[in-house]
Amino acid sequence: MILKPKAAEHFTDLHGGNGSVAISRHLDPHDVKGLDLFAKVVIEKGGSIGYHEHLDDSEGYYILSGQADFIDADGEYRPVGPHDLCLITKGESHGIVNTGESKLVFLAVVF
Amino acid sequence: MILKPKAAEHFTDLHGGNGSVAISRHLDPHDVKGLDLFAKVVIEKGGSIGYHEHLDDSEGYYILSGQADFIDADGEYRPVGPHDLCLITKGESHGIVNTGESKLVFLAVVF
Image (cartoon, rainbow over all chains, first blue to last red; front, top):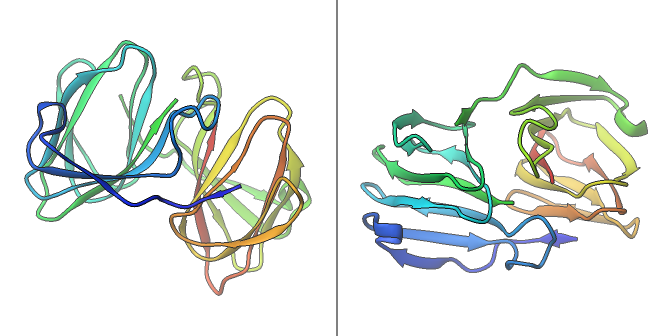
């Protein structure tokens, strides 16, 4: 099947982060077994997604464009850019901060 | 954790397709539970990955750049481009043909 991105949903201060985050989902949770989220995420300059825990699933952020600090499972801020896959597994936490001069765009994959 | 793409592995006539396919994996199978492959795939102009079955897992192709025909689970050839997620689930088959004038680049996610 071919799944196109749906209209963006807009969030502010997501998980205690800053600014505006737009999420364009390709599928709804439970549409596909083993894949609870596949979405393009856009964080405006200066924005972030706050540090939060994944109790029941794992998630990868694959950076498409822009520069960021990924807040890793150990709480460390690590600089990332295009082609980096920032991964946490079940029970871990993460967040991300747009540190660049433009939008940060990445794919979020929850499995 | 931050996973960067590994050096590309090169395949010819993959699953009975044509031409050269380069696969840059971010992780090895069984590194991460529930995610058996996360890789960037590049198919040269005129190339393809032949139609093949996934007996034990599901796979999505997320088109990053280029134009293609996705050979869907029903055997139909469907045109796809950037931002399309081409998904098959366990037990289904798929393939992809680079129909564009340049490289076809996509992410392959097996879960």
